[in-house]
Length: 51
Image (cartoon, rainbow, N blue to C red; front, side, top):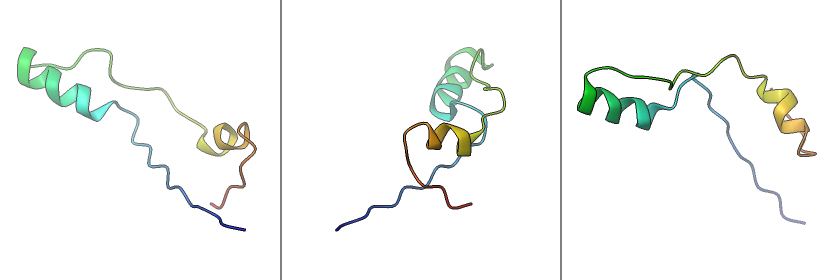
């Protein structure tokens, strides 16, 4: 059986969109996310979580 591992990195923002907005409009808008429970979110897909 083959397994694959995925790494989730969460810093609370849509970085690429934020960078583009800052370049075009000199300020970001609506790109910051609230707190995310990555462990609970991952478990909803039936995945094992190593933390």
